[in-house]
Length: 422
Image (cartoon, rainbow, N blue to C red; front, side, top):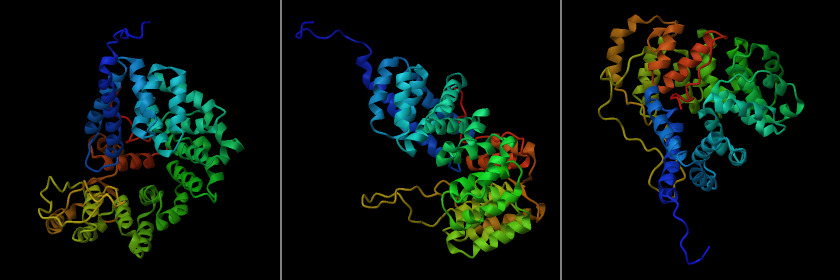
């Protein structure tokens, strides 16, 4: 070719910036979604609408698969979970083994990229995902097995005999992340046949292994395992939230009150005590929660607990404080401040403790002390299923767990999984 002669015009390359925008938007919206599914004010339909926007950009990348992949490949170098998610969905959709190997290798770099990769496997249609789950679970690479189990977890896909084989292999048990995920999956998939594997792991000195073994055992109906969760409740750490959410839903009410009294002696556990009270859902604690609504540091989380027990929506019932206190919370505009975490209560309403107390004085007589409630009703499967469909995200999380605990054979819904169809 004559070097002075311009290269042939490629119409697709003329729109390169559009494909770059597709990956930027898909990756950004995925990050938004990863935050949204843990927020208290979003409902399922709003998450579905967000997913549809993500899918539109993913579809845009596939209008020219090679050009779409070229911008994905470049984005992989950033090693960020959003870009990893977008590139992985694109690679698996093309079915190109080289591209898939590239995104898998990139996804195994660290925990954040791993989350993006697992999310991509959760996003795919069953036809695209299932063959790859089998490949990962059959792989000689233990990291691939871990990936396969994590994807089974988010999809609630039964790993069948693969799970039992992993739990029977010494090398797999020595891979702590793989072992812990396998134990977690036993509970999520309701695998009663694998209860012996949980029993073997319960006494483990490793806090992750022991936690997931006991957590899954409770989900399979062994409520005695709750007594092994006290160290996670009292010492904080990454398992504290899951521990209190499950423990105070299965403990007898009198025992639960005793545990809460012990936790209340530790000032650092103030928020955890309120969350435990919400999980227990005994209206006996409502007056105390109203007192906590008068304290700025705990007002909003106490309001959330109040609604979870009584079903009384603060905003709909005019129970919002019109002049809430101003609290300092991160992140802020100071570039030297390393506090970039979002305030846990940012999207919760500020309750007006006086108005809430007045309303409760009228409606409290409708509740029986010593009986557990969920969103204002006695806990029944039909009511929980209704809340799974119509409640807000954190309330849906609680409903799914209550439903799973009510029947060890009941499907355990993944409320953070994909809502919309591809």
